Picture (cartoon, rainbow, N blue to C red):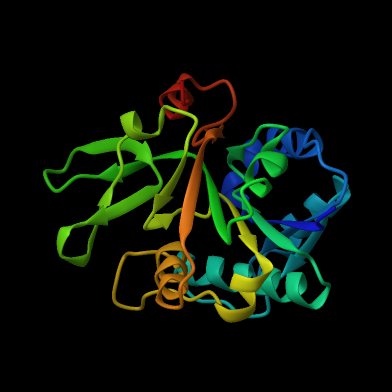
Length: 232
């Protein structure tokens, strides 16, 4: 059976759903996985809290003034552990994303190098409005990307995509051996976009399993505003 490392980059801003998140982690139905939370350099207090709740938690040694860089440092630490300790897959789960018990079994069955589940988030539109959509980008004419719509992911199919978010994403060892994490210095695009781009340049494709549906808790559990992030 494949050995999985579940990597959870986190920070105190998501403490409001930490207990609920851990409850979902403990319910995952798979025999060979370990969990490692990672926090920023100056978050020793939050690290201790997570450890007291029964989970391993590391801190990165580098720090920048913007969030995307710090998340990238967390992902690099998790990649290093995964490679050095001979895991077969690294599963990223954001600490505000609630997953289903069969998430590993569903994602791993496809044997893809990059395979994501679905989670919803809020995106700004050019006219100032905001839209809730899956964190997935499809290919568009002219080498561009387009944000996918919810109606495109309501079946249970496996779809090839240009970019998938790392809120719920399984990465196979061979792609991590060749591609590291980085961020775009001059862009609002995150480390997930950069990784999928770099992986595609050397022949690795990204997929989404539309049957793997998560619940993104952007607000404390029980807040009705979370309902808009449900996938039904």
